[in-house]
Length: 126
Image 1: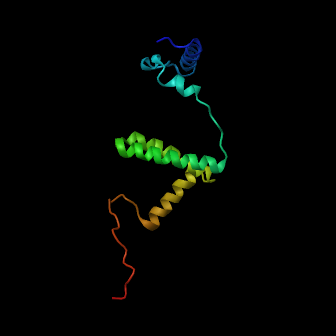
Image 2: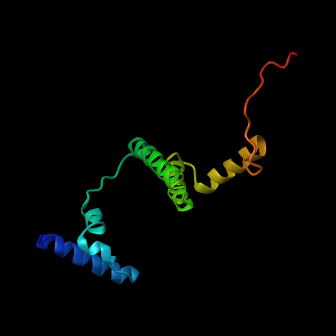
Image 3: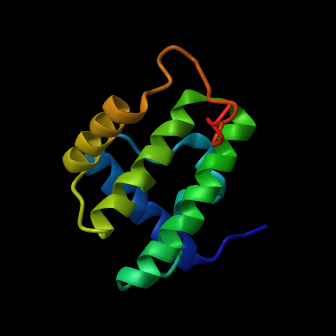
């Protein structure tokens, strides 16, 4: 099956740019036009705050699902990246978010001891 000359041209330019900027060209498996070329041919759209937050929330669900399926710690990096983008979109820097996390740990506890609260008794009259 012959690929179009336009696709070949895009693929070759991408390979050249990757080699020049990063010292690595396209992976051998990508020589069959499976990944990078398709990625770079997609349209991009800059989104406003609400639209962006909505798309980030979808992405967060996707990344969490990938982690839950694979259990690979590297997937948590993707989750963290989306959380950071969500925080920044809400006007909170990543450093501020970490400070909020530490304060919440001081007041509510954390998972360091692997303890989970199973129930809360709200009737203390007995």
